[in-house]
Image (cartoon, rainbow, N blue to C red; front, top):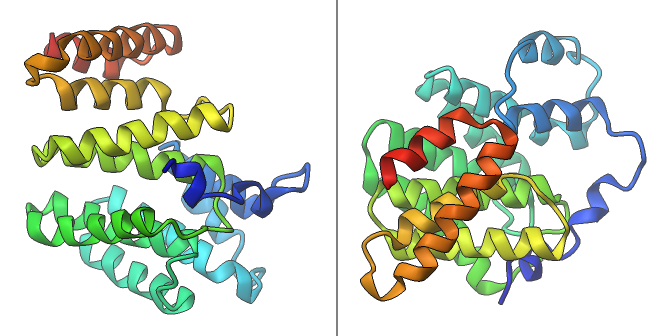
Length: 226
């Protein structure tokens, strides 16, 4: 099974040539481009339809997480789950689970973090179509889960989601987070002597992609891994 089986209709959500303002804001948040986001969100007050509310609340909950406001973030993410009715075929359910897990991980509540991460894993295993997902969202989930599982020393899980992400990116001709996914895959295999060649392949690919993107943060991580 590939992640494309799960996010099978990823293109349905954004078929218009012009991306909506709310979609553009979400994209900036997922790419960690946060300057000016609060002002952009405030400009949308009173202009949102009912279908936009779960996306708006997800963005707000993510911003609260990045700002270190864990309680506010968890409260807002619960509102997202109320709006989606925790439906597994809604990308905002999965993103809410993801950011809830990240909030708990940042507080070192590993069991709670793993609970929410596993909720996403269960969706993948059940092969449920997430009809309103796009490639950035799918790859953000893979990148973040593989990174988080590596941090929790759950290397098998980390490799699984890094591999899902790399396959998904290839199938959909997307380049989001490629360097990070290769790095996460390498890190997950670092202490596996029987997969040393694969580890070096992933590590080299991560290095060259990070070098091309001038991703100094990732280059430093790669240098520490060697």
